[in-house]
Length: 252
Image (cartoon, rainbow, N blue to C red):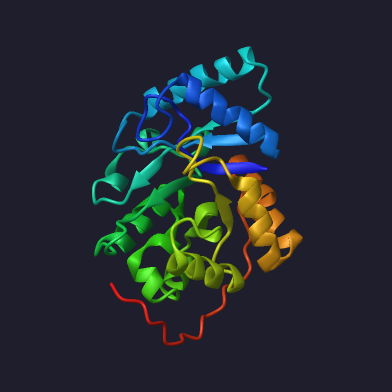
């Protein structure tokens, strides 16, 4: 299994607090069957792509010393903001530095008016945005069909395992279920930050998703599709389905 969204890199953001924690997270991931972990620290915490790559290489050496068979891949979780796509291509973090896919998150409270422009600018540079955990965004909770617009723009979608497992509450769990059953998601990621509340729980998330989608589709989201991303190849996806909105008595 491949985890495309983690905060395992120590001393980088609000994830692993130190090397000991990062190594323990790696051991826990290996026990679950992880073979590859993408280290995707928040870019606004550590806005230096070269430094991130250096830190990932350093952590990989520590993994080897500890006998861990996990392969680490450099990446970052980018925050949507107007100047992001104006960075030179070599300064925009992409998975493994291959320049093809990046992980990007939006504001949880509102969708930015310059979203379409930033996505377009990234695509002009040859980068396909993977939108992180949209099931947690207020606008998507209210109307999951917003995700269809982003897929139509050429984006791919990553759902958090914690959302599928209900760790963020019933509204987000239900939104994740809707997205899964309507082919609005292409990857599961743990978004792991630590050893307990936000752990590398990709195995549990995969098992929960398999109960919803079946083993074959769930496997694609934790193995086949992430492998395509890390290879820098084009990912073919199924046509998403429109959700027939029901009355959902959520109060915000």
